[in-house]
Image (tube, rainbow, N blue to C red; front, top):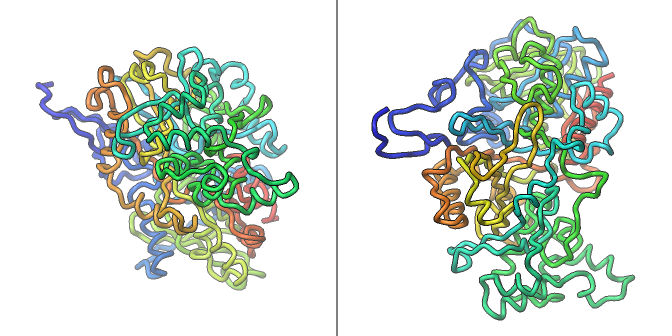
Length: 613
């Protein structure tokens, strides 16, 4: 290779001029057929999650009511079941249908993304010849020991042995051993200087098992070190010493007060906060736990989400530690389900053996499969043949590469987002149609960044950095898991992947639903260059200059955008009304619980298959 004169990011991967590092030599903007042997979406970087093109047809359907898709090819394919959505719930629905009705039943799973798994997204980063894993959405199996018998049986059948995490796969001592703790990064643009303080100022980091919660500083020291005015420091100290004991009410009145009173009123009236920078800090301290800024929370909700102003406490107890996490998050669960239904997809048996397996995507949609997964296929209409009460068939219309197709099925499980179902299922009862439209989701961004080493992180002592002035409000070392032959980074000289989390908000003080919509538009309207610029500024301002150079040390960036992230249930009984069976169509997804974890997705899939009879 000739002399390198410049470096640049192309679709998230750092390229040397004259060289190519794109996966398998494919062009970054090429449309790769899902049956191409070289097709392997986990290795793609840049804008992922709700990637470019994944929502084009669904938005046309929902926003403009588009129904004319041109010439439609009626495929000579008939299925016992079509599943709309290939996330955890959709995959589980296919699995349960086979278990109930026979392994020979023909099933088609349609998904609008270029990979299966939904929010359970696998991010592979190649760093100086070493493959380093990260997750791009659904993180961990939350509290699996408290899961239903149905969940336990499925996990066992696909080879997920949670005892391995208890027995050392999750390195609980990693953060303490490396003196990595929860810190806060104040950026210059917002707070007047770039400064890292060894204190989280909130309870949010407590969900990471083993992280040291800024124990080196007292509240007095933490308030003094914050880049605030003297008055602001005094107000911040009052917040850090806050709690229900600061509310001057009789105990019998306190419960109602914390439920009906906005969190910001608590800061202002009970804790005496006037400094706008403290509100800036407070708004960003709940992140994806709350699914919204704390300006939309009551006192009780803010406390439960770990916001500033309450005594820190562990989020999980010893029976439900937050450690059941594959190196690629719940993509490990999704891949194990796919392997169970399509055995030729990869070598290995069970989730642990599949951690390092390269999946052969060309196997997903073979006509000889009992279960077929068809990617980049957006369903735009689902309709019974005849009256829903008496119908024997359902017709499913989907778009793939801008071409319209139809298939027939005896049954359909809708495992997509609830708010899309009224737009694509024809003939829904009016009450159910209205109820489904009340469901929503908050936007989320999980960015994974490949680093050649983490020397700067070690010097900073950062296990997680709360970042109230940045678009990504938190940065953290990934979960320290070694399993299935995969080894988590051992020393600061080794490559690693860091996670950057953004729960984007809209205009402060406006209703949460309006903020979701506003933030979603902004998030999806950003180009990769916009994300890269923010990440560059964030990491450069936060890390020690003598040990970190962005162009030298950052190898790759994967921005997992989820316009519709965590479930936010609708009011009253709208969720239960919305999930009712409709003829030969049932509904399986987290929204129908409502909830936002893998166990819930699996349980809802089991319910939906049971409702089909």
